[in-house]
Image 1 (cartoon, rainbow, N blue to C red):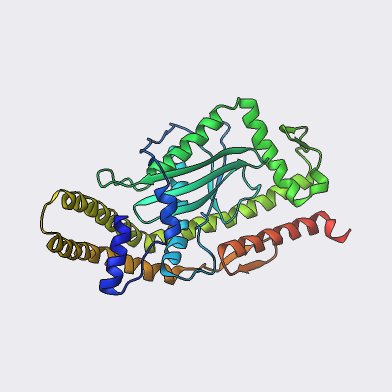
Image 2 (spheres, rainbow, N blue to C red):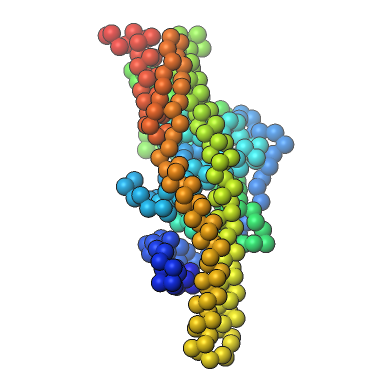
Length: 360
């Protein structure tokens, strides 16, 4: 409520539009408790068998047609936060390879899909779903976290909790079930390329799934699938490269914006508390309050404007990607999602041609 009043005051005094829309505020205000910081469980070595995990680029939670500065910031933030989650999973040292992907597929045994429900630089609320390649839901939960100046750990409270809960689900499975999941995920990926050739190997029902059999180790079709899968992994590596480049270019400004938001919010809360206990003249107090609020807001707006300009410059920007097949170099353009979809279609066509299915 305090920040809402401040945005209105700023709009009246400086002509700036409110930075957070009302529907999002209603989501955040309905949240009863903010999650506490949870320490990350870090292993000396990854569990065996090592489980690979895919982190989908976050759903920013804004309409595609929204061209406002805050929507541009949210879309930028959706990539930065996905990178934070990926880095947390890597830092835990509990897993195999952690890959960022534009969209969830059967590429890896477990995928994480996340939507940003609310974010204002200080407070963050996410809806996180983790599902394995066979359709079993591991995690379906909302996480909310409020940064405090004492900790300055960013949003580690959320990402640590996600990693720890995935670890609990993975640890609850016996070694045979873990191995079966990894093997079944490979079969599920092969099914996406050649449904007829790999059908019947996994038995699915309302009660779950069962790995019935595996393809022969010397099956030439399996070798083709593995090669196509490795080509898809290479595309995911380019996403990591773009994420590192994005962090280098906009990460510092984004961090300053979050820090300014945090300091401004905590200052206003302390000021409100002091103002409530004062017995000054009401008119003079109101004028002083407006002056103080505007002064505190100026530094925040400077950081926010810098972030807006950066976000709008990067909004929708994706670097062209050069990918190489056995006999050609392919240039992919457009958003990461469209590049990924094009590359996957091309890989499937290559598989069909090599297997002879395209001519049948």
